[in-house]
Image 1 (cartoon, rainbow, N blue to C red):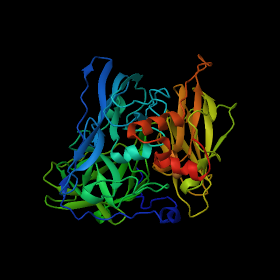
Image 2: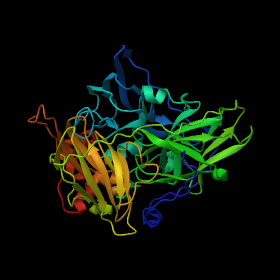
Image 3: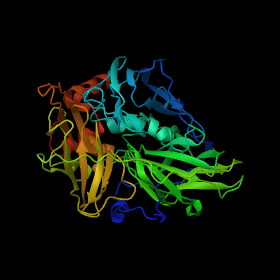
Image 4: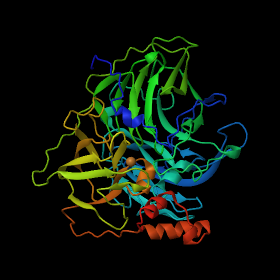
Length: 511
Ligand SMILES: [Cu+2]
């Protein structure tokens, strides 16, 4: 293990400290502490040696988040967020996706390398209210935490804000053989970081809070809990952070500057563990750490903060001493050779507010922006063209894993050495990544500030299977989904409001 303790966040401080008009700082909740919600594990409907069958139902609900009136929420098989899905590498998964919401949604598997656009669950795979869709896919990727969220363009942001986000854990034999905490809910817990603003009667009001640069709220919400505590009953605890916020990045650190060890990023373990006492996570990323509470006594409390705001109070209880060492080698990150016939592909993340675009264009659902052969490896250069201070844009690709090669020609960060699906690009920075797809289809790639993707900082790639090069994909268009939203809300089209529409209208563009 690196002996040096990393004590910086790395990212462009002027950009993340650039508190534009819409930036909402976090505030410590004034309400009593609550036990941290640990999402239940989703039970399969049926299981064989090779296949797993699940039903996922998107539903409305109400949750006691604050004293007083319950907050109206949405979730998957739960009133808010969702049950955690466990995927085992090598299994074939059959998903029955059911929509019990009042409006159209989609079920996107963020981080799964499965064919698009239907299995992937982006905007071309709508499930209308009262209807269902069945998909089948095979899990063929390393252990990691991925997630499920809604993706109906241009209303992804609002649906995620309502609560449509759930963790999913991919398991494999390699990770299972390593001495790492793995007892779900006890010493291995998903930590979904989100923020909300509570309006009258403890309700959320997405439209009132709308900001084209990403909706934020002052109140941290962790796994759907406001002001949580967690009872520590083991010396070591594995925290699987997922930034499920629409925009917010979190600068994580513990009281006493307690060092911790990062073991995994978005889509794999890191090759080597990295010791640190500061960790930044941005929208849609996952970062896994192991915290050693060995120097604390029963009755002590260790606090996880973002900036100066407490997020989780870890209450230390009696535990058995645990001298397990995290291995120095955790993973071999794939490093396939770049195809010499494919030049560098350039992507620009442009603008802020309503002017957001990618390569100078706003997203169109029925336009393919790029084509690439399956199983070939190409270098992509992702540039954030914002003037400084500007905003950081977390760049995400569906359907694949990539590796980070360089940042403005320099080495990648010590904790972005595994497989990733989301990478932050600072203003005026070029991040070079190695991209390859093992599955065919049409996939989206975009900024994961969700209002930026709804507003058009997004594009589509067609990944061509050499065995079936002429396969045609039926691409829907924005208007089809928007008409559905208007009908479901019982409003004429000219009165329909969806966040992303503003960004197109104000730039004089049609959808
Ligand atoms: Cu962005």
